[in-house]
Image 1 (tube, rainbow, N blue to C red):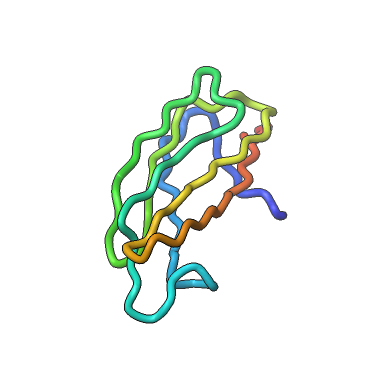
Image 2: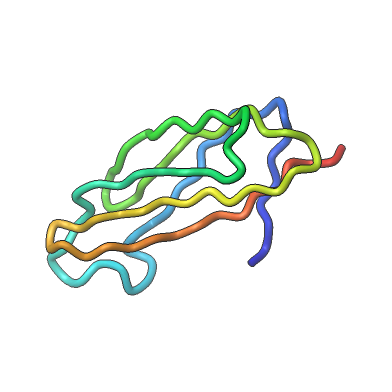
Length: 93
């Protein structure tokens, strides 16, 4: 999985599109989604909610040189569960 980059001073919004892939059947939509990051020490993740089957979160407080996995877990209106992760590397510069 390729890494996305974020510097320690940035407060960036990351999103996952549940329509992009096998997660939602025709007529299904996102009922709820939750975010988690590992490692979590010192990191702030703010859930920005869901719009048009896209879930978003803002991430800040990363540590230079650290690699993170930001994961969104979704439950659909039809009871399906999906999980997507974003690998983030805190920029070395």
